[in-house]
Image (cartoon, rainbow, N blue to C red; front, top):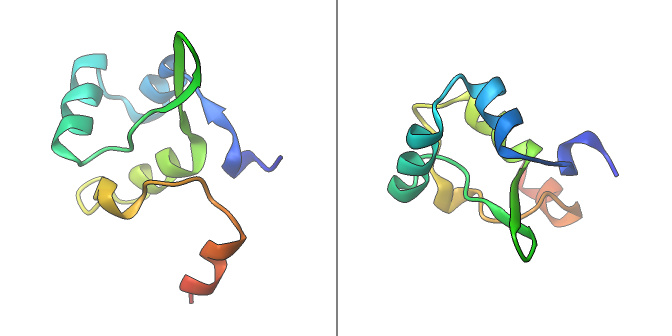
Length: 79
């Protein structure tokens, strides 16, 4: 598994983005931050690649463009 497909937990997201927990969840509700993915009955995380895309362009990020895990089908859209 490449690092871009890794799932990271809340603490890592907070550390990498500098956002507070409240701000992360508010931005998810607004559609301006990546949504969580369920990893167990009581656990969730974020695709690291989605967090990387948000960090690269926080003002331009829109969650409706980033609803799935990275995969081979995504390569044709780049370029």
